[in-house]
Image (cartoon, rainbow, N blue to C red; front, top):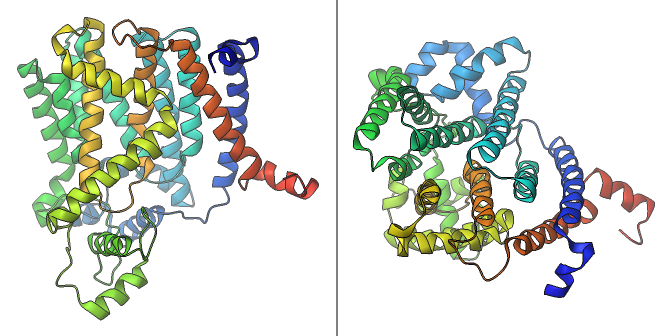
Length: 435
């Protein structure tokens, strides 16, 4: 294997060129397959329903009722008014957020983490590959939320280098906007402690600003209904997502449905008609605390799924670099070099979010929930590869990049030529015996 990887054909620059071409093709074909999806897709229905309610009752009335995402709707509602189809307004906002995120990531990689040459190019290729996998234009608040997380990390880096009041102010506002984006985003917040715990005054200032902004965004619904405002995805027949997830998990354990899938609302209604709903949780909090044996078992199931089906898929061998660094940073915390202390804080942030997410999700963990952490994780593990002295890896960084790029080419080639997409569909018609 080493001899093969050392041959001129598999040199890193050539692999980067092949991967760049493959990633562009993959991105275009992936985007084309997204256009085939039913419109509106997934959670877009809930956001369009919120728009219908706003048109019927007024923006302030729906805000007081707590029926939409305050941060996202304040940013996107003007776009929905400008366009005939509100969904296009949501999707334009998502696309803008994605473009800004990529610009921030590139600037952070090049000017802050100082990635250069093959390490910079490799990280950008992996980012575009993940971007192609994700529905980057879907009209929901995902891309808006992940833009806020990415920007918050860049601000934290600025504070780490030189604490300035403007960075503290902006960071507090951004975290406040995160609080106002979706209730589930609260599991992101504990991870910020790992960046700020050494500077108590800064942490308190950021926290105070974030709470004020978050309170202002939720104030109408808090004052009117004593509840936080968020998109309501529950149907109008009294069923809840907590019930759907819980019964789905029962069906998974009974081998009635595959892992990481859910039953339909009709199947949930049939279940309740047969067995009743007294033994089912009704809220998100209840779903976690209702049956601790389920919750603990699912934590390990989701953690394993995260590691092998998400992190390895998009980090490749970078996952093992991250695990090695995470182990060493806990074992030799006092010996971490100054330039890697922020990197350490980020990976504590990553694992904090991962563990909390795996604990609160009972059935189908979605890759989109990790978007900003995957983007940033790609940059940080490339930083470790470019400065491998502290890890003392037994395999050269360039060889890790080579293997990663080969794995990426295999994965993309499979999609390009075997999965249903514009190119493979044409090839099957032209040469059905081959494809």
